[in-house]
Figure 1 (cartoon, rainbow, N blue to C red):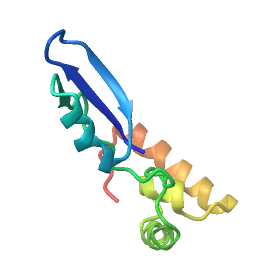
Figure 2: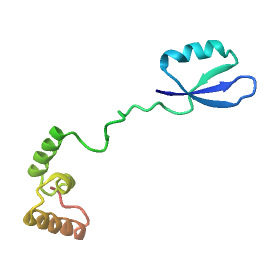
Figure 3: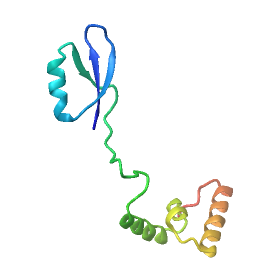
Figure 4: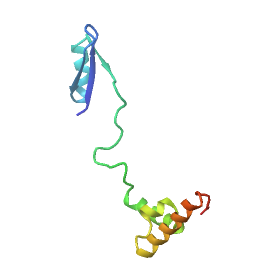
Length: 105
């Protein structure tokens, strides 16, 4: 159930109430001294999802992109994790930093 914020127009006090959406209008009708207020932006992320992790199918796409660009930052997260690939990325990164980051991919 959603949480609603109500401001008492007589005292200025703000309270929070948890109720069904269908109960909100009736609650406001029964309490004319209250008005609904929004203190923050409503949450838009699903409660079951993690917005920092891409879905499985997209991970495959990121993996293919990182294979095509083995020296990119993306390759560090989604590229091959074998010893040769990691060593190559580290060496390339070391030389980039030594050259001042002016080496293009």
